[in-house]
Amino acid sequence: MSMPPPASEPPAAARTRPGTVTTAVWIQILLAVFLIAQSVAGLLYGADAQAAAEDELAAQGHAMSDLPQGTTFESNGIAAYAPIAAAALIIVLALLNGAGNRPSRVVTWVVQPLVLVCGGFITVTQLFAAQFMEAGIEAAGGAEGLDAQALMDAVNGAYPAWTAVASYGVLVLGTLGAVAVIVLLAVPSANAYFRKEEPQTFIPGAPPA
Image: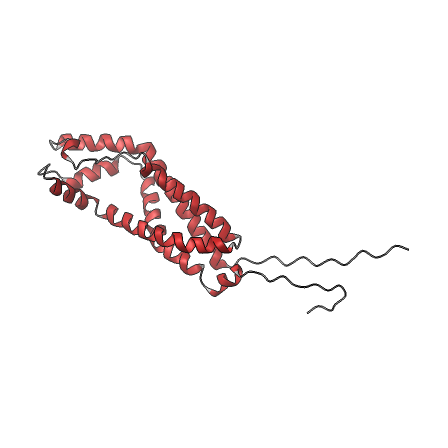
């Protein structure tokens, strides 16, 4: 006479990801996409921007040597690849957050304030690029009469129109989006999703709780 197979513990029900976490994940992914697009634009069109700047300076009777030392409009080195590395990190955190990984949420709460600070810095520098350029020229004591706004317009004109979408996407998602991610991952529904599940003791033949 064969013995009945031992009762096994029923599989745990899959957790349902709340909309708050899903929204936070998509904000992170979109920010990463815009960061990558912005970096790719710099790599593809940075040389054109540099050439446009040099042409505008020549038209105004100036040269790159009249600008503060180290000024360049090309995207290379750390400036070009650091946003891509940051985007990769944000995508990894987004995927782990979507899966309910608790350490990932903690790391996100550390990373997102840094994103907020960097996003705010980028916002200020892009909105007031010409003013910062004029201040740098005055501090260096050269290039009198240079039209900094015309110079920045020439640089920006070297990029295709879609790069503006990427730039504004980084600005919005790196500032308001960063705050939203921090809040969305801290609301009660998110806390319940990330809460560590306690193992349940299963006794074969016992009535369900």
